[in-house]
Image (tube, rainbow, N blue to C red; front, side, top):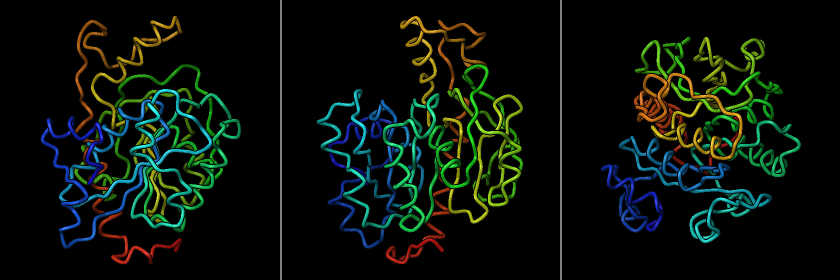
Amino acid sequence: MIPNNLPAREILEREEIFTISRRRAEKQDIRPLRIALLNIMPTKIVTETQLIRLLSNTPLQVELTLLTTSTHQSKNTPPEHLDAFYKKFDAVSHEKFDGLVVTGAPVETLSFEQVDYWPELCAIMNWSRTNVYSTIYICWGALAGLYYHFGIEKHLLDRKMFGVFRHNVLVPEHPLLRGFDEEYRAPHSRHTGVLREDIDRCPELELLTYSPEAGVNVVGCIDRRSFFVTGHGEYDADTLAGEYFRDLDRGLPIELPKNYFPDDDPSRRPQNVWRGHAHLLFSNWLNYFVYQATPFDITKIDGE
């Protein structure tokens, strides 16, 4: 369930992804899952489309609320789009949500405290403890969540983790990973990461998937209310290519994304080899940790 004129709608309908208007949804005698998407990526329209695509792979009705920060002015998204489709945290802080998705952001070389909207993000993460049943954090959002909730430090990498990497499922019986192959691939695009030993030392966390080359990928809380994903399963086939050519055009040092272009030839079109597992991750999350776990009376969501 998305706003009628959201640009993502036309793209998703061409892909035969089912969307409905609020007017039609209100005539159905079911309670939709209330999902908030805190989009702190600079390319908000692209990111919202990618994540709506993943959240739509379910027979459940999902009512999406798009959120942005008050303390940071987006330079890459038209203000008309933000005004029409996004809400600020203050406007929803009194509400309850079944689920929350927190995106990444291109601020990872800064310490968390140097990010201009860090205090507001901390307030949102604190609010989520009592007002959201389950939260999934992505890339920098995952690092921020691990740091805020558990004090897990991020570490600057020797070189950018950039490309598509193989990962191993460590806890195959976990419902979030139900249906996963024992090995799967996922894109990464980041300058920082967290250490496996730091996750293993935290009794409240469980490492679910790991890559010998890219490191920690999916981490879950033992209480199964929060999940942290350091990669970008939502990326389109050409997203890493766009980042690569953008940095080349700017004269920035950038290596070829690993395991991405066929035969490492940037003139050839990359293939999306991670889409299936990305859809599975989000459909499992919505099913097992939101729909089946959240109370029907949404006002009863709390921090217990």
